Image 1 (cartoon, rainbow, N blue to C red):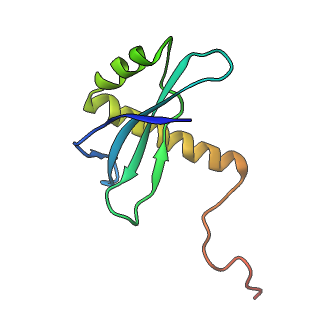
Image 2 (cartoon, rainbow, N blue to C red; image 1 turned 180 degrees about the vertical axis):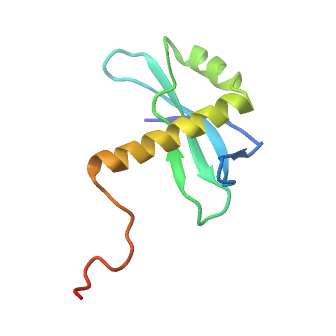
Length: 108
């Protein structure tokens, strides 16, 4: 089960001007007992989206994972947001999904 390690107070902005609050999140892997960490981004307003990065680090124990999380900088978080958004877009493209326009079921 994942747990929030650090909540960052300073919002992070993506290139489109959308603002997110970041949290460093982690969990222990069942397979080998190592700890992995990633960043979760929550949009500032309730209508904004939520996005998570892929795994950003693997550490041998929880204390080392917390140390990693506490040392993250704004610049690192901006990079993690960019990677998360890029990964999210490529996953959508690989699945062949497209945004819903509301006109898919209308026959002309």
